Length: 107
Image (cartoon, rainbow, N blue to C red; front, side, top):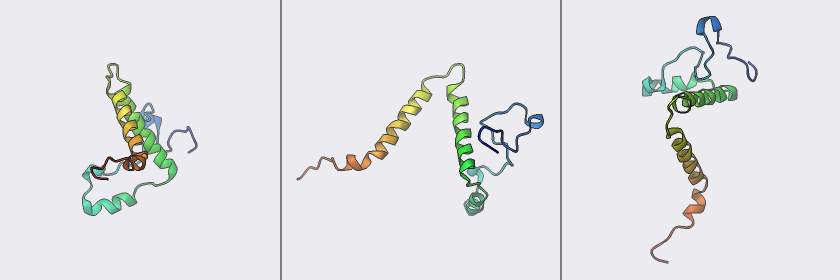
C-alpha cells in the first residue's frame, strides 16, 4: 500500500463506493465494549505502524468532516470546535510561561 492508494482490504465489488471515513479491515470489539481485564489484549491487537496511525487520524478527520462540515445545513459547530481546540492547544503549549506570571497575595 503506497501513499494515495486504496487500502488492501477494500474491494469495490463488496464495499461499493470508497468511503475515506470507513475502516475496511477486520472488525474488532469497540473500545467502549472492552472489559478492563481484556484491555491489554485489545491494545496488543492494534496496529502501531506509523502508516496505520496516520490512517486512523485520516478516518477520524473524514468522520468529523462528514458529520459537522459537509452537511447541507451545517451550523457554527465546526468553527467553534476548531476555535476551542486551538485555544486549548495554545494554553497547553504556553502553560509554563503562564504559571510564572501568577499574582500572589503576599510577596
